[in-house]
Amino acid sequence: MTDQGPVTRTILSDIDAHLAAPMTSVVGSNGSGKSTFCQLLNGLVPADAGTVTVDGLDPARSPRAVRERVGFVFTDPAAQLVMPTVGEDVELSLRRAEPRAAARRERALAVLDELGIADLAARSVYELSGGQRQLAALAAVLAVDPAILVLDEPTTLLDLRNREVLRALLFRLVAQRGLRIVVSTHDLALAAEADDALHFEAGRLVAHGAPAEVVAGYRAAVLGAL
Image (cartoon, rainbow, N blue to C red):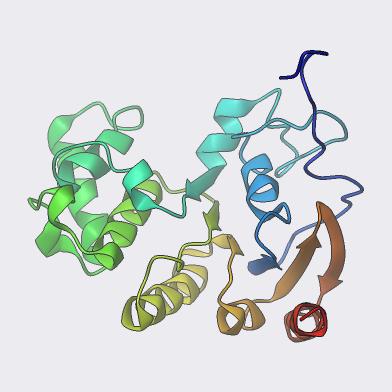
C-alpha cells in the first residue's frame, strides 16, 4: 500500500504448460515464481488471469474437488502439523473421509507404516527431527489418497540422509501408488531424475522439457551470471 493506493505485482505471466508426466520437477532461483506456480495447482492461490485446470477441474470453481485430488506439502512441515502427536495429525486429515474414529486410527497407522514411521504415531510433533516432520506431514497428505502430490522445496530443511530417504520415497510412490508428483526443488540431482522439468525465472517459464537439458540450462544460466 502507498499514498496512491494499493500496489500490485505480477508474480507469474506468459505461462503455458501441460503437465502429464509421472514426476515433474520445477527449478529456478529464489523468487522466480516456483512456489506460486505450485500453489496454483491446488487453489492455494487463485489465478488473476488465464486458466488453470487439474484433470479438467478449475481450482477457482471447484476448490474442494481439486484439493481432494491434489495433496500439497509445504517447505516447512511445521506449517502443516497442528495436532499434538503424529498419529492424531494424520487422523485429523481423515475426519471428512472417515467418520469412524477406529477406522481413522487404522488408516493413519497404515500410512505411517507405509512411510516407515509407524513408531512415531504417539510421538509429539515437537520432538521430531526435520526429516521425521517432513515424513509426518507427507503422511497426513497421503492418508486421503490424492491422485497428485505437489511438494514445494521439500528437501530444503533436510540433511543428506533425509534428502535421500525422501527422494527414494517419492519414486516409490510413483511406482507403487501411481501418484503424479510435481516437486519444486533446489536439489538439482533430484530435479534431473524426474520425467519432465520446468525452469522459471523472473515469473516466466523459460524452459520446459527433458529434465537433464532443463537442469543443465538452469545451471549454465546461474553460473554464467556470476
